Image (cartoon, rainbow, N blue to C red):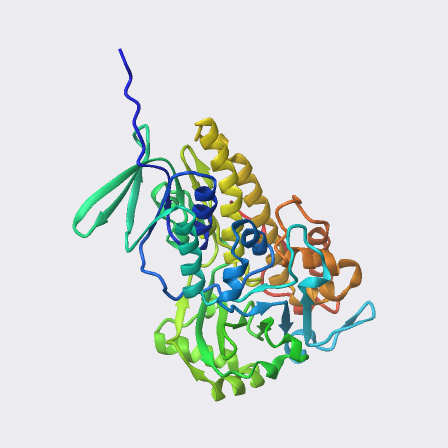
Length: 451
């Protein structure tokens, strides 16, 4: 008696064609696997998350993308600046002889990165960038279908069935495994009931593009005008991003906690302008500029999954984990999670074994990296001035820069994060400490990940 072995239509189906999905498809196609991408939208389309960190450069190098990045003339990102107002955040405090100022900045070239051959990364128009990435995956051999919304995956048979519709006709394909790169839609996370909302971070954002905003207004040096800027506000845990999109277009967004976020569209736009008004130079610059797009809002930023992989599936990018984007980590984490996942998937295909254990290296690596991001962001929100101190202090500067470059996947707990957390704990316990009154409204231990 012979046993019928089901034949797959593809080795791997990838749900979602954003940076996580297209990067996965590119790596797998380059390795010779037959893969298909289902993207529910038609590219190009606008998307938030417009700045990268240097760890993304490793992906560009391995996939041969640098030439295309330069051809598209995406702005070069050499560093980052964090600004605040003396009155609202530093109060002129001098701790251990350190005079506090209103700006902190870093340049990526201050620390060499293994596998990163240039001293800048990029800001990107996500519509153009995501299209470039998806087309590159197709050029490497991946099949790509846009305008196709996947409804779910049936794991009850020997091979998973990915279900979707073409017009009014229900269809499916059988595959050896599935990669969920559906972003914050989190298709498998919802289907398999894996999703856990963050009990602490509940950030919301409202943002738009502005033409001819003068980026020199809040920069200390002309060379910094094309850096990413993070402007702190007097409202607890609220900040503004400033990201160059082209020579003349700048993305501006306000991020705040849900409790501060207005309900109606009109109230949200008013809230945006009130927040910007807390930084008069920024308000002046935006009033002189032209808004190019309607305001758009994003919500429920931070969540995790009980597991990032299982028998015949892995979750990458925002479909696996999303952490507050204050260090512009989203796209770079998505691309690196695809990079790590692809290694395990290729090995699984070589051995014909697609069980959960086959993807454990991927999951442990991503959990380690995102946990480090989470802890970094946690102490940052708890005490903004602490970050300013650590980024200026020579004995800590390069260790902090390593995190800002995106090198967060190797160490279980970087020593500089331990030092930052211990410092916050000490300040919490000492009401007489000059920084105690600058603590934000959550305690240090409240930030411990619950996942």
